[in-house]
Length: 409
Image (cartoon, rainbow, N blue to C red; front, side, top):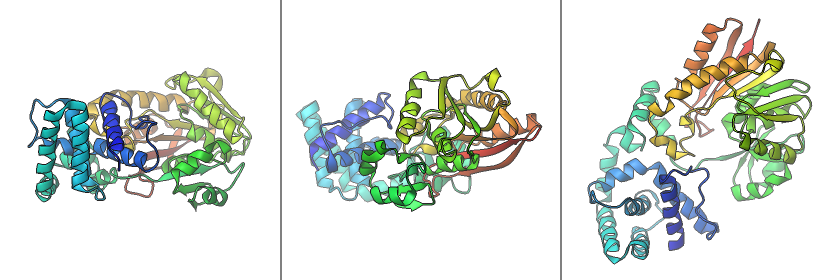
């Protein structure tokens, strides 16, 4: 692999460290193919193992070491410890070359000494990591680790382990235009049921997405839309719609017949839904900026189905967004009030007999069971039919919560 790929990975990690989101980051247009995939693997791997890598480097690195040098060392260390197909010598040599070109010969010598020392003591380092505290071993904010391990005492290690590694890519088939077997054949994938494809060639899939036969959607999110069970001719309201996967799925299930109101607080995101709808050949969706904490009076009691996918901490998708791993539960405190307000407002849209799906991409029970339980306790006209927590070591490879609620009176 070229040093260009390693340099691109270093720059990507540096940008994310300065506040960019990992799902929006690019390793640069100057590399492609195998080099690009290699750079992305280093960047994402370094991010998801950050606390562990810092822990290892603490014994061999000066306290005064500049942050950019530390980031470069972490990218080299990640290759040495976690990329089996990368020879230690290559990881060291190429990282030193980058250090020399950016920071000069003196720093390059320091980087070389640190990485060579680590190569000589890899087994001891693995043993040290495995015996370290859980938040270090799994590279998670200590308070967040404590919260989730307390909520899932029997399987927390499996949960955190599942956040490492490459995630599967699932497609939601547009059954108005195509079928799962046809889409699977085109993207070198596997049909899972009538409307889902497990994709084995992401580049091919992304190249065909504008044909409108499918869009990318996680398996858990697809399950939430199935629970919604939207029918042709119904009225559906999606209160926090962007980026729109559930709105689009409902429209497909409705065979593009009926009405869907897709609201979101962020007006600049609504064109994403509109563009996807055009590609899929869907014209029953009306988008509008609206704050989901307040119900629109003219729509109260009009909906057969409500999608209530609330803003959340994202603790279920730390595998694809590793920056979430380093947030404290204190950062989530304001979300709980928002979630309670949104579910309360969203429920007002339902007709008697109507169904609402409350969902999050979080596994934090304070955002899930606690919010739904409080809502049901305070609203006797509504009943919880079923709820489910999907943990990231299941086939979905992401954490998710969904609750199916019916208005009975």
